[in-house]
Image (spheres, helix red, strand yellow):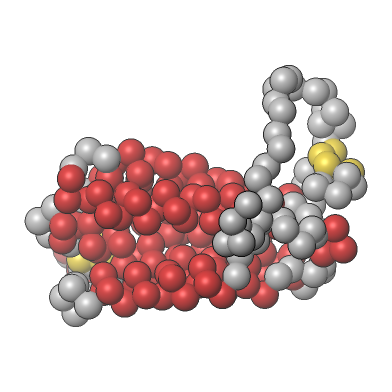
Length: 206
C-alpha cells in the first residue's frame, strides 16, 4: 500500500434505500448516536450536502464547453472535499477515526491559490455584480449563497458542540472562490458581467 494514502476507502453496502428508522424524526451519526433531524449538526452537514448538489449542476454546465474544462475539474475535486467535510460534521469529535476523511489546511491553501490565479485575470470590479450573464455564472452564485449558509450554520453549531476549525475556514474560503469562479466563467465564455445599477429599480426611474 502506498505511504501517500492517508484516508481509508469507504466500505459502503447500500442494499436497501429506505429503512423506516427515520420516520420518528431521528437519524444516526457516524458514531451511532441517534439525534433529531432538526438538530444543528444535521442542519450543518445537510447544508453541505445541498451545496454539493448545486456544484453538480455547475459541473454539468462546465462539461458543455471545452473552455470551462479546468474549472470543471476543480469543482469535481471540491465535491469530494465537501463529502469529506460532511463525513466529519456527521461525526462527534470523540468518534473521529485517525484515518477518517477530513478537511485540512492543505485544502484551504489550494483554494487560496486557485482564487489568486483566476482573480489575476479578471478586471477590477467597479460595481457589485449580479448573478447572470451565463447559466454557469448563476449556478456558481447559487452555490456561493448555499456555501455562505453552510458556513453560518456550522459556526452556529460550533457554539454548541466541537467543530473542526478548518471546517469553517474551508467554507469561508470556498464561498470566496465561488464568487471568483463565477466571474471567471463569464470571462471565459466572453460574456459581459451583470452590474448592479441602483437606479434600475422601479422607484429609481421616477
